[in-house]
Length: 92
Image 1 (cartoon, rainbow, N blue to C red):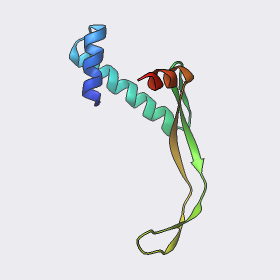
Image 2 (tube, one colour):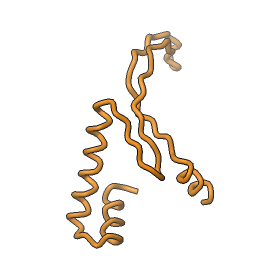
Image 3 (cartoon, helix red, strand yellow):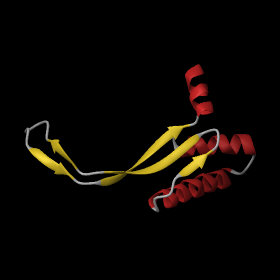
Image 4 (cartoon, helix red, strand yellow):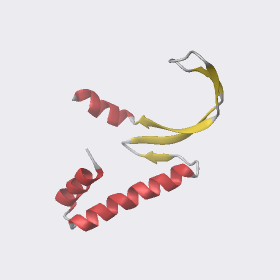
C-alpha cells in the first residue's frame, strides 16, 4: 500500500476531498518524521510505538572480501506493535 492508496482510504471513509485526504496524510507523516528526528518516541494507542534507538559501534565483516571493518554508531527507528494490533494480524 502506498501513501496514495492510504489517502484514497481516508477519502472513502471520512468523506474529505481527495486533496484534503492527501494533505492530511502528508502532514501526519511529516509530523512523525520531525518528532522521530528529534529523538522522541511516538506511541499510538491500539497500534504501536515508534522508538529511536542508539546502536553502538561494532566490528563487522564484508561478506564478499572477508575484510573486517568498524561499523560506526548510529540511530535506528524501531516499531513495536501493540498487543491489540498483534492479535488482529495473527487472525489474518
